[in-house]
Image (cartoon, rainbow over all chains, first blue to last red):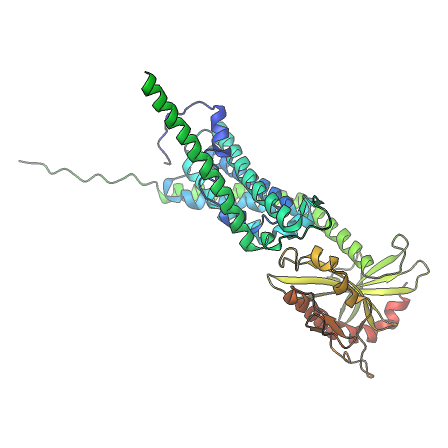
Length: 220
Length: 233
């Protein structure tokens, strides 16, 4: 049968926070970049796509974790895909029923969540090896991290490309929108700027830790 | 006498076990999808009906939206069918009547390939002037800020094309006299031409193509059944 049981560490705040920051799926692991670049031309779309993906991640992690001891290793990928596709279909119907505007704006990218490697990656590397509560907390963290990354991109692109935030104008009438930012190249520009910021923050943290270590060695 | 060590083969689950698990997962998936579909389907249909109703009234100018009446029809070469709760079919013609019961205009749908995907439009047609009097975008995933619904409908100059776009039929009422065409921005010379949006030529062309195909197909049929549409109230 499936996976050999592993010693389980207790659930801590870190189980949730890792997905939000240290293991952020977009800014650190560089996963799920297709919807990240495609639908973040407005903050509203970014929130919609982020929450839809988080829901699929949460639901599929729950089911994969519950069934982890009965799914044979040989058919695990097929099983995960069916489970993920189920939750994608559910979220597709739910968005269609909630907002026609959002449904039309996200288009085929809702159905394409099924191919998002963040979700399959979590099912294979985490949910299939951990208890349901821990898998759910981790899925919530990763889902929140993915939504956070999409909102970071969407808000910057909308502000620069349309001069609005969540549809509300934030500059005067004289503002000339930087249209390239809501076009596909703008997605790459803004994503690379955020990645640069994250890399700089990570490097600064490492440098500070090294400096502190040197001080401890020098004084000790 | 020496005994050779037998190679260890990994334990494989039986095919039956794998089929059983896949069957169980498929069953759970099917149950969840059907439950959600049954719950959301009426909500989706109602939302789409309301959105369409709102759009239909939007493309017929000069009517009191609170007092107007809308009737859906299915029109094809086989004839005109009025649709209601008892008649099944997909509506492609929406007649709008004012509070006195006179025909105020007809809303029709059109679609053509845009930059990203198919651009779906709804336009208003007045049989008395034989012209298009309004247009709204039902769906467009073209470039945001250039060819999307908000950008197209926010372009005052482009929308002015559809205040009285010429769609007259020939004398025998069998075809459109001058098929609608999209021309480059600033080069419109005839009343049946659509002046393209600057920077969104492909979306403009898609709208023009959608109008040309839809008017070419439906307007001769409307002329044939106009007495039925006008007096149906």
